[in-house]
Length: 208
Image (cartoon, rainbow, N blue to C red):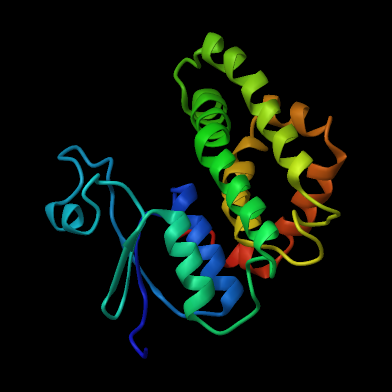
């Protein structure tokens, strides 16, 4: 399929960046089409045709139309040449998906909105919300580490889609004093973050 993939979204989105990480790891050239779902008028009408809930990212590759980052990430891994981004065995792929689900269900809210957004963008920050988020954020870190195998990544020497899904969220968490304090308690996560953030794909997926 020769068509150039199009990724619809914004560089500030952790989910857009997760897909961009997958594309970079696979060496896929693509076009990032800006979409601001937080515009005063709301998501553009043409974007609602791509994503009925008005979220980002959305994705096109020839006749393939997708939304939801986990689905797009899996398609990118399976549709394009390049290093595999999923474990080879069924149990490993299930654990990978389990980590992605933990990230979406528990880490995203606590790491991104309740800690990063409140601490770094709140005017003033909601200290009660921040305090309530810290134990949930820590539980997510602990739960993922318990599933992970020997590092430096979740399933060994090479990153999987779960690692790429986590990276943009952890990048924001690590910008907060609460997040840095949490990470001091998890040597696994410190090593993981060093290994992931030094990959070329991490720099390539930043910015517009």
